[in-house]
Length: 205
Image (tube, rainbow, N blue to C red; front, top):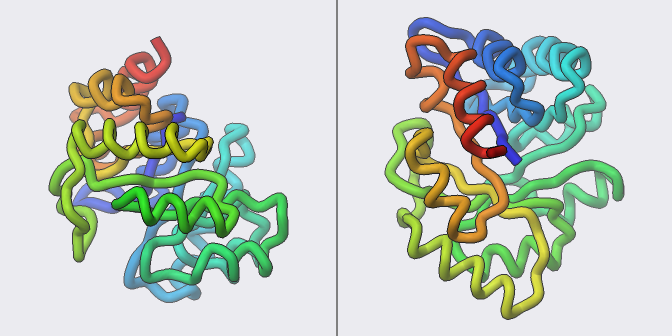
């Protein structure tokens, strides 16, 4: 599972970043626009949803449960300070994808009980795309969490996130993590589409 988290840079808009990801073969996109209003996000989300539908990609919106319901997006990703997962499940119903951010095994247990469909677990290392960063996990942190999940028989997809580059991916997947989420590694590349294709080849050998 390879997820792309949209971002903007001096060169690229949110929609540019999503187009690169889809053109490069990514089939799971999250629109993340922290600090923006729903009115700012709505037209971009509508266009992003259209692009994802055309590509056959899953489209997730970060945080904004009401917009997910309004636009018919595939799901929502909820951070630690966003709406509780159980509340979002009540509003969105059983078929909507709900992901939750986790930094510890206790977070994962809580998300599992609240009916999350997947976990975004990180940060792998320090990243500039996120404020108020939780403690960095690294490979040892992932190994420990995966083992705790096995022992507790919690079978949820767990996606590593936070400052990940192409060179990190084999070692991260070697810990038992089931997916990778990327943002900056794609947009900093000289050719983002080519970089996405290269990373997909690494994650799906």
